[in-house]
Image (cartoon, rainbow, N blue to C red; front, side, top):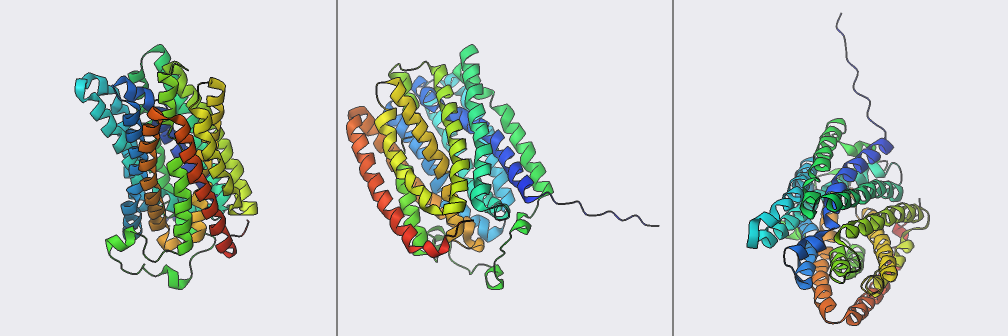
Length: 416
C-alpha cells in the first residue's frame, strides 16, 4: 500500500511577518552596528566632516537610487527571493571587511568608503523585492501593523548591534567591533534561506488579490520607462517628493556621531550606545505609528517634517542633553520613514507594479539624500544655524506637499 505524504502546512501570516522580522533583526545587527560608528571610523581614517557627509549621504543615495533598477528587475523577472538573498549577502560580507581598512595605509579610507557603499548597494538590491514580498503577507494582518511589527523586530537588531560594537570597542578596538559583525551576518543568511524554503510564494497570503485584468503580465515597457515610473499616478509622485524632502533633510547619524566625537561630547565607545538608544526609540515609533496609521490613515505622517526640522537644532548643539533629545527626534523620524511611509506606497500602487514603485520611490529619496548629506556636511563646517534654517524651510515645503497629497487621495486611504 503506497504511503502518501501530506503537503507541509504553510505557516500563518503573522508567523511569516515575524520570520521576516527576525531576518532583518540579524541583518540590522550587522549594518546598524557598523552604521553607529561610521562617523568615528571615517574620522579615524582621516576623513573630514564633508567627507563623512559625502560618504554617508552617498551611501543612503546608493541604497535608494539603485532601487530604480532593482524594482523593475524584480517585477519583470519575478525573482523577488533571489534579489533579496543577494542583497542580504552583500551586507553580511562587506561590513566585516571594514575591519581590515587600517591595515591598508593610505588606501584605508577609500577601501572603507567602498565597503560602506557596497553594503548600501545590498540594501538597494534587496529592499524593493523584500518589501513586495512582505506587502503580500502583511495584507492579511493589516499593512500598517505588519510593516510596523517587522520594523520593530528590525530595530531590536538595530539596538543590539550597536551595543555589541560598543562593548567590543570598549574592551578591544574599533576594528574588532567591525569584525565581530560577521556572526549575525551568517545567522541572517541561514534564517533567510530557511524562510525561502518554507514560503516560496508569499502572495498566497494576500487577502485582496488583484483582479484578473491586473494579474496579467505587466505591459511591456522599456527599461528607462520602468525606471522613471511610467504609468504610476500623480498622487504617487507627489507623495514621493514630499517624503523625499524629509529623507534628504534628515541629518545622517554619521554627522551626529562625528559631532559627538570631534567636539569631545562622548568617547568613541559611547557613540554606538547613543545610536542603540535611537534605534530603541525608532522601534517604538514604528509600532505606534503603524498602529495609528491603520486606524486614522496617513495624516499621522504629518508629524515627520516637524521632527526632521528639530534634529539639527538639537543634535548638533554644544550641550549633550540637547544632543540626546535631537537623537531621540532622529530615531522617531527614522522609524516612521522606514516603515509606515512604505505602507502608504502599497496603498497607492497595485500589486503587479509594487516593487517598481518601491524602486522609483527610493530612487527619488536617494537623489535628495546625497544632496542632503553633502549639504549638511558642508554647512556643519561653516554654520550650524544656517543648516538649521535650510532644514526648516525644506520641511515646511514637505508639510504643504503632504497635506495636499492626502487631501487629493483621501478616497484611497481607509483606516483598517
